[in-house]
Length: 409
Image (cartoon, rainbow, N blue to C red; front, side, top):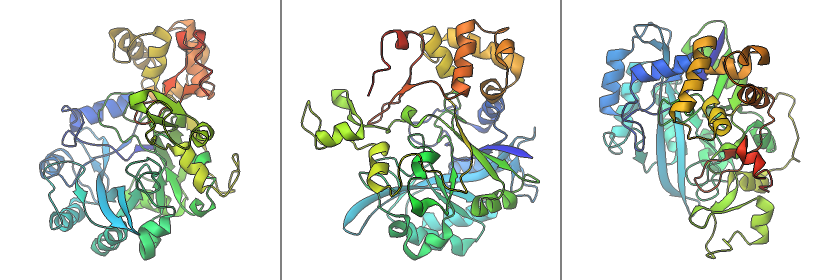
């Protein structure tokens, strides 16, 4: 069966998230998006785990379901802030668990090291290798996935606080790491440039802080497994067998793809940044060094290299973003919702619209420009003005192209 999974999200109990982020809304919008397996987010939070136990039922498969049958996997994200090798480190990890009993043990472990009640993504002063060893001792079924591994401020390879290798980060516990999350600002080809990553599965998830369709499922991992069980999914992550492909946004769409300084509205490619010694030309301060630059620093392969075991991927900009740029209005405007809802009513879910519906059928529901933009998106033909220093990239369609914004490099 095909499983389209978004296994890194958050609940309403995480900072900077929608206060309407509950199971009912997650289920509703996952179905509209076309996601058929969703992470629960934030299972260490004492109030959220209580709600999860009330809303989700266990059946022995490790996959929990709502009363109407929407599948969820127990998942959380933690932030580890500590000092190692003489440098301050800030690394985020996604944790997957097979059942509530194991979750309770995980929460007990972290509860002895800090507070769990103040944030759905809690912070601990524990090294990554120690966390990996302790969680594996609780259960070998726990899966630890370094989150958005290239993000500058909070990730394994982050330019501001990360390591230069996975082994430096996890030391002798690297044997328990099987998969890496690409994050919005990188894609598989960027990760293929590091030969040391070949043995790890590359996965994608949204890290959504709201349930809106331009957030949830914007990145996802597709599995091809005999049956939807926790064991089958974990085996796919660990072996690569059954991990079919990933759905990615164009990495330029991510908030940290290029170098830059948001306060001065300065965005630079890696080469431009090197020419300026990584300093903002307006204020002279160090710019935030983006993912593209960081990959270039650590890469031992040329751009375009594809390993023999590489999994397929697609670049897709969220449908609402496409409609927004064609219409020239905000992504949350009534005009965008009207077009979006018409497409969903006719074709059932967003991923079907983005990937499968023929141009002729799209043209029966939306105007020619919108239909053609959806096909361009499917073909990976939409250019994106790169994101930087916390600013999302901008898909260039409609009036943006007419104004000449394609010359962004």
